[in-house]
Amino acid sequence: MSLRRGYRGFLRELLATGGLAALRLQVRTGALHVLRGLLRRRPVDPVALFLENYGADGIRLPDAEARPLALAAARCLACGLCSLECARVGGRPPLDPRDAVLAGARLEIDLVRLGLAGEIAGACGACRACEAVCPAGIPIARVQARLSDPAAGAVRGRPTPPASL
Amino acid sequence: MRVVVVGGGLAGVAAALELVRRGAEPVVVEAAPGATALSWGTLDVAPAVPGSRRLRWRTPLRDAPLTGADRLAILVGAYAAHPYAALWRRPEGHVPAGGPDAGAPAEQVKRAAADLAAALAPHGLSLEGSLDENRLLADLHGSLRVADFAFTGPASGCLAEAAEIAWVAVRGLPGAPPPVALRRLAAERAALGLAPVPLRALELRLPEGLPVESTARLAAALERPEAAAAFREAARTLASEPPAAGRVWLFPPVLGLDSVALQLAALRECLAGRVAETLGALPDATAGFRLQRALAAALDAAGVVRHRARATGVETRDGRAAGVLLAPASAPGDRQASAPGDAPGPPARLAADAVVLATGRFLSGGLRDGPRGVAESLLGLPLFDAQGERVDGRPARASVRRRWLDLQPLFSAGVVVDGRLRPLSAPDGAPVLSNLFAAGDLLGGFDPARERTGLGVALQSGVTAARHAASGVAP
Image (cartoon, rainbow over all chains, first blue to last red; front, side):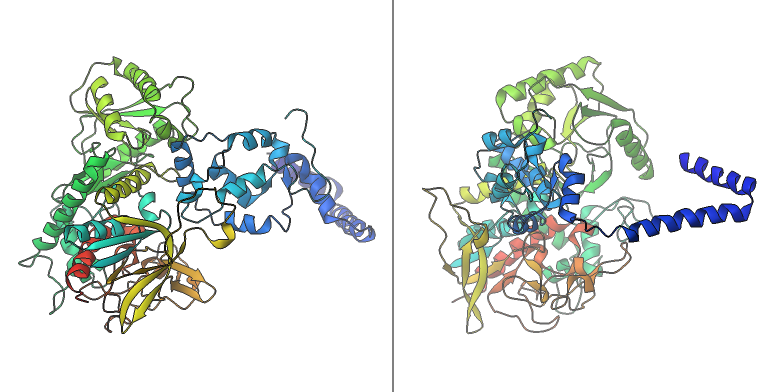
């Protein structure tokens, strides 16, 4: 809706000011944008930029130590046998083993930020029953431990747990 | 005589149980659950998917339903590369569909199914069905399936002659919204030419404390007697309506894991009519999980030695398999400090008079896509697709067609076997090893996911491979 309105606005401008003037306006604003990008030569730290943008949402950068683990977790078929076995042996982790593996595979979700680390560390007994049934052979207990480790994964400094979520 | 069976899925277990019956001494090597544990509650022998372009469940001319036995005869006769053709190959060629002994394959499958049912029955899972009638079962999303055999849970939910269908949706449980599922169910029934029946959606509100975040959690929770009682109390409120003859109650696949038969019986008592589960759907393979547990229990009851280990190779001597090399089930890099007091690890080598490979395909670890392309994991056996094209030795993507509705060579890749289920070096070559047999999804020439007959092939080929392994190898 807003897009169409914007487009209509441009058309109205085009009709009101005459085609050439509107076109010149477009070129000028576009060129300005490009020029501004070229003139700003101050180096940008990509890591800092990433953390600034996504850190507050609990997404962190994978570090070298987590890379093999994330690759192992990426083999997940999402078959759910781990969560069945976990439920069968009576485990009640706040984060389902399958969800943990998927989180570990896709994004380095920072559970410290999400306020779940303490509960996970306390509740998952690390009995590794889930690993025994995993068709892909994923070290699920290590993924769980890594996700709930407050010290892991912060590239710059250590993330501080928020007072409340 | 000792036969090492590599693979603990349905093919491996069927082979091991048959070996026990024939007086041999099977040893099962299993690493982790595979495709069997991800099955969804039916055991299909010949494909009959409504709308499938390859095999219909009604003959187009007479509009009469094809039974499982008919469909099996068609497969045996018409598809030369299919494992069924290898199972019942005649020297002069293929068995004609309506030939004099066209009933023989069906008889063999029925016997194998009866044996499996007898082995599973003491462990709380029964196998119901036959090849002479079709079972019309609904899945979690309201789609219909024609099944030959089904396990406890979905087995009692045949919708062909239902007079009324009560669709029970558990409040809070993820899944298709009941109106969507019922619309699909009505449309698919109409497409099959079945008379419309009343379809009703009922919402089941569970008391606090029962987990509803996934069907898996709820099914596991119902193993506790007090949770099962609470569930039944909640279900009793559904029965307030007057009982109707021929009503089928369809629950999601949450009725316990090992205790599913008891749960169904208890629910049948409080609700008038037949009670069944819908077929499961990934990501919660509750039905496959039950099957895998019952299979393991059946092996233990039969006294079969099971090793939890990954087979890494087959030792050969003079053109024969002499043993199987094992490694601990978890990869070396994955090992954390193991708990003290762990059971002793598996032996590094198992001597064998014969070897049955039931390692499955990619999902189960029997086939791999490595740096040198697709390969069979244990021996690097040559792999062929349904058209007889070589698949191994090149990357998996080279065997994938661009249009996804095409038949994909990669999905029918497997070993080719002779009439005694021994892997061959080429489609009409010699056996690779004289006492090496293959069973289950490892057999190429069919697409278990498309035909959905992986378990049927696994059952019959497992039994047949065991028969040949037990009889044909005088050391």
